[in-house]
Length: 284
Ligand code: AMP
Ligand code: ZN
Ligand code: FE
Ligand code: FE
Image 1 (cartoon, rainbow, N blue to C red):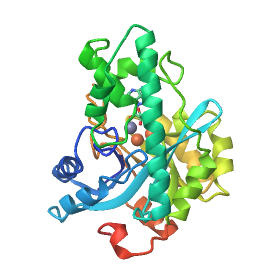
Image 2 (cartoon, rainbow, N blue to C red):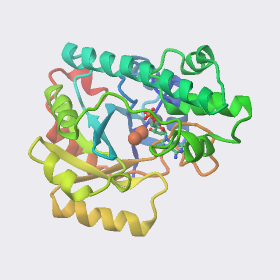
Image 3 (cartoon, rainbow, N blue to C red):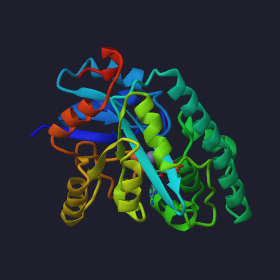
């Protein structure tokens, strides 16, 4: 069975490998179908597609990961085979990225109030050109010696109920699905175990055009995956997944190609997407 990994991050958001480094690692690890799904950004896509030309066995699928909220729960929505050059999509993404900067600054202020000052320019430097996210703040905290690793920063400070957490502009899950659909993409619910009342959220998102949900994710156990597979089947959703690799240095991080759906998921997603030109499909 070919190795498929449909959830990956690069320096275009909070991953630590450049698109080229990630593509080379994917090829080295024998991954045959991969989707780069940066948070609120497709800025890594052109470089990744160019790098993939050197690896005839690797096919890249254009992707995105949007962050939405429902009450007390974060709902991440992945998009595949989307027309990533779509102007409307790009201006929305730019707005989301601007919101990320304001929110990150608020979190840095909260950390200072907690007696854990970090320099905003340092966070900016770690994020580079990428969409700034909590992992960049976490890395700055590791550098300062406030925490041993990124995971600890989330557990103690940056998690949703942590003392330094700040909200960002709210995007509803149905609106995230609609945005992906308008750009011709297939929308997929990410890491469903992080979502409270997941079946209620699925029932809301289905009429907006939700096509799939992640089942084969990161370090999910076989029991979790089989429970999620039943939910996917119940709602007629394509069972998707991937490693969610960030190269953040967490000890138990799933490597690219460690987890992913069968190749049939790629065909099913492609059938649910409606891109407008062959180029945006990557090399499929
Ligand atoms: P943000 O986009 O700023 O809300 O940050 C969300 C990202 O933080 C996720 O996509 C993960 O990369 C990372 N993340 C979330 N929770 C954790 C955690 N407990 N440990 C490590 N990284 C996490
Ligand atoms: Zn991330
Ligand atoms: Fe996510
Ligand atoms: Fe992710």
